[in-house]
Length: 448
Image 1 (cartoon, rainbow, N blue to C red):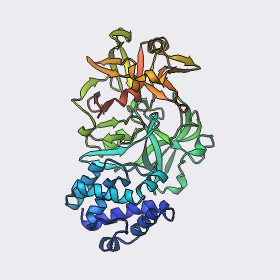
Image 2 (cartoon, rainbow, N blue to C red):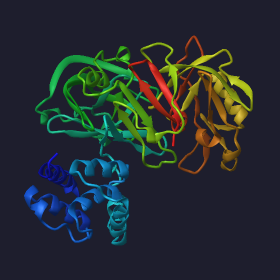
Image 3 (cartoon, rainbow, N blue to C red):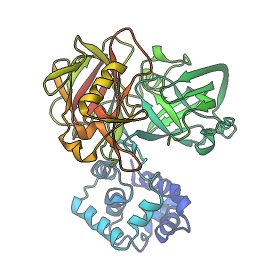
Image 4 (tube, helix red, strand yellow):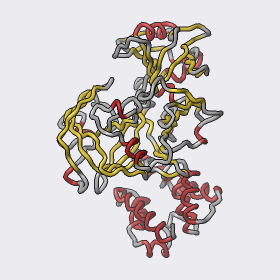
């Protein structure tokens, strides 16, 4: 990439901060600088609060100094490789101190907490998309739909295969507080005469199938089929716009090709693999990556587990134990690895047994424990393909809005003929997970 192209891209990025114009001094400066022509920006001085002199280093430092709070070292390498230059990390620390010292950094991050982290970047052949951790319950990432693009925050869900967002015609109460797709504003929109409905554990939707251009980071799927919800229920307090399913295409309720399959078929993804790193304790840094694996997100080696069968992200579990005793899955069972669930779910009788062994106190449908005992609760161990995966007390206990501690074990609502479990985010926060469609297997390793 030549220098002129870099500055055109960088100026386009700064123009995206136009919403900051006039609200803060830093926003006004960024807006004014980004609104200049590429040639002017290239040859002009940077705004006064950017005191580091050399303009390439300042550009990199803006990314890595904390303004965008996303994997700074990767972004520094990405930008500076494009420029053919090296920037010492000590320079970046100086930039962060410069911004923080003038009380600019915190102002921007506090006032605009939702948009700043949602910048995807390329790491070799891997597309990495940041996810926002919402109270350790949901992880959402940004995608865009249409031409020009409209932005939505979606849950990347390995338990389902359909992708949908609310329609402008959805009048349900949950739709009124979320982004809705305005199809008339997209020049690439195409409608088809097909309807469908999906029932989730937490809600349901009914909608229509349409086609348009969808972008996940730098991955672009043209004429991608997806759903527009017309009616929703159960999502009133969910802080996401829609769901992007990453399960196998045979599970698609709308009978359309999932976006991951379409991108893979078109060669946009180098390997038919995606992976998740989910942060703990509401921290930042969560990502979903497509096309490969970034090894800096996990420790030790990946342990590969074959799927029960191709067509679903379920694996075979040998047993579930606590304090050396088998408490469930005595004869083996299956477990679905579900990035869209905030729970560990299992058969009702067995979940009740787990709650009793933990020593919970039931109030309604919620099981509480004294917060003082969380760190001494025994780990629950899932043995998968001969490898033990402990889930300690601090991982299966959450705090509610009143500061009370409760377990995130829950009874499954759907009964099956054989014992089956759902391993959601309490498990996946502990273990970096790789979903390998090419070999019908899942890789697990302790997360960093």
